[in-house]
Amino acid sequence: MFSDLMPILNKVLSIPYTETLLYVKKMIARVFDVGITDFSLTANSKDLGPDENDTLVKEIGFNVIYVMKKNEEASSELHPKNILLGNQEFFNLMFSLLSHDEEYDVDNIWKLLMKLPQNEVPTAK
Image 1 (cartoon, rainbow, N blue to C red):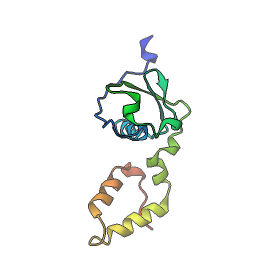
Image 2: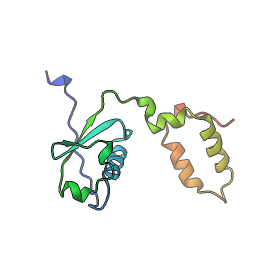
Image 3: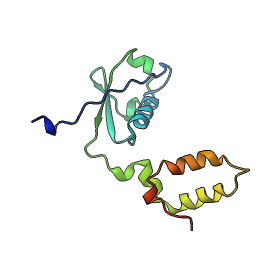
């Protein structure tokens, strides 16, 4: 009976009260390694949709528990990782920037490329 239930994961994030809900959503997406459109967010029993993205955390309240629920209709092809993997022009640009190490931040470009699944990264053309 319980095998059908998704495990509950708890994470604690320290969010400045002067930040917006969009910032909160971005932090949650980063911590759980999901796209920002892959989940819905609830706080104080209220769904926080895109219309509330500009709302400040202090307007929601302090010490709020945010509940994240996976969107069933969320498409993995909209995840930023998959958008980048399908864009050969992006990789051509990144590999081109890597060859100009004195002009660009090569370390950060390399770190970005290393976050992508290595078996799916196309080579530069």
